[in-house]
Image 1 (cartoon, protein in one colour):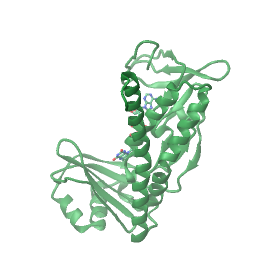
Image 2: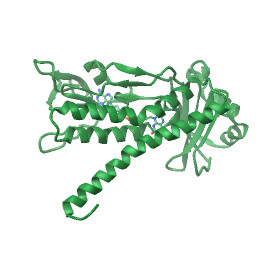
Image 3: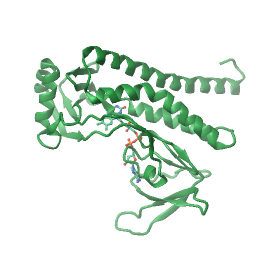
Image 4: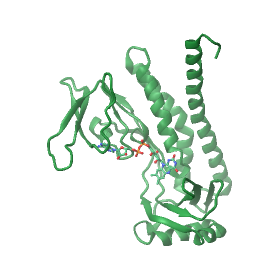
Length: 284
Ligand SMILES: Cc1cc2nc3c(=O)[nH]c(=O)nc-3n(C[C@H](O)[C@H](O)[C@H](O)COP(=O)(O)OP(=O)(O)OC[C@H]3O[C@@H](n4cnc5c(N)ncnc54)[C@H](O)[C@@H]3O)c2cc1C
């Protein structure tokens, strides 16, 4: 929460509802009481930003229903493994199924398997068996490599959710990240998207334009244009109804879609260089 001259950090505090003015404009949040306390605390704000993820309560409270939805979603089993000694991402798309491993910190790799609805019956049963079945189906050598690695922690299940775009602003409120735009995570990059859109939203809120709505409309337009091709590719990949030539096209489309997002990120850096140069009086 950002006040007039300070930032107050309330980690672990749940937002339980919104506060509204008489004319319906959002003017703050109601914070749930601390553990064991029932009393709520109200915090007022000119703008409330919902960065509360895929299952956003804020989107529900303000009635931000999707105006565009994906057609598919891919249930996924994922977890962490050590001993894979990877120096790069390994991704497999075979027969409608997907699997992959990505190196992460502490010598671990994230491993995932997924496929169209109905293709991962082990989601709420024997996840290890499901993971090994799909990993071996997409690549026998990937399956063998996994058998020689050690799983760290439990395997998790994501049931799959169809992608969506929600209108990300209204009177006194805005949405950012998965709360406003979500696509099937088979092409990853959702964190980059959320960070990019946070910057876009911050720029819109700081823009000297009046009315603010014009700047927020531009935020929505830029977000949608930067994510559209990746959204479409991810959605079709999640559906699993592709053959090898088509999957190649979809991965190229996903790659171009990531470049669309990158161009927006590069524009932030350019504007920052220009602003710094203007301040110092030097050429950018
Ligand atoms: C299975 C799976 C795999 C993925 N893999 C990748 C990947 O490899 N790379 C990648 O870049 N992206 C990946 N993503 C996508 C990525 O996780 C999201 O796009 C990203 O986390 C979105 O960030 P966010 O801040 O919008 O939401 P979140 O990260 O979901 O954060 C929302 C936060 O809001 C909090 N919150 C919710 N409600 C309230 C409330 N009422 N009061 C207070 N706090 C609240 C939550 O506790 C949470 O901390 C994956 C997603 C899934 C489902």
